[in-house]
Length: 257
Image (cartoon, rainbow, N blue to C red; front, top):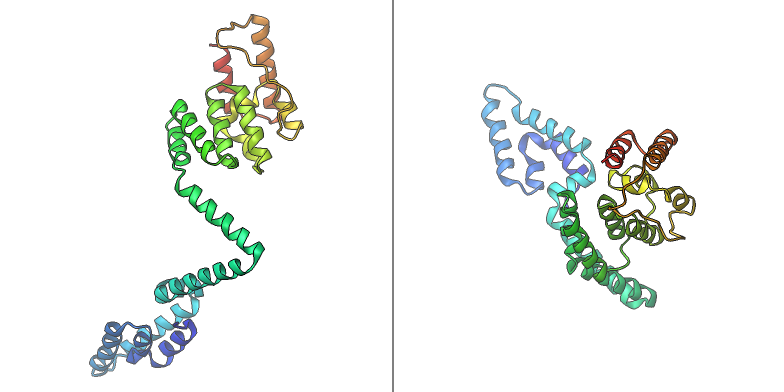
């Protein structure tokens, strides 16, 4: 493998002859530096020397990762492949390592044969809620232990104003390791869930669904008193910072429909 420091010192002291470029396997550039040195030496212009100093400064300021990525690309790929093979061999010799390797392989296979997660995310962005829910359900059938898919399902159900199923999948996501509670509090897709009457209890319970969520059907027409109570509750939740101003306006328009 080529050394960044070696290339830098060669550029600094022998750069006018293009030695550092030959060292890096760039014979064409090396010849250019050499020719430039001899051609401009007639006019006493140290072009090759200046180019070498510039290269030396560049190499000294370059990180090892960037240098390897540019000048040791093939060697880096080979090294990583060897490290991976060595790790696999070590895992096979170690009983516990074998289990880890098998788990890693199963995870990779699951990702390869589970295209529904990505298609569901795409449909969710396009607001095709029914299509997104359908794909996320297929993804859950393939890998039921993916907390992100359950979170996405909760988001889709929330946008579809199905609080009961949104709470179930949000609770499942948290139980399976989803820990981004700040996202739950600010995600626009969960605005409907956050203004639900059971959300505060759900939050206090550690984002776990302990009782059945009571959801009003779409055909129920609320009375003026119910509307007033809902609006007051929305205002109170906005005051406490549980929902944003945008969430407040969205749900206010929905209630007043």
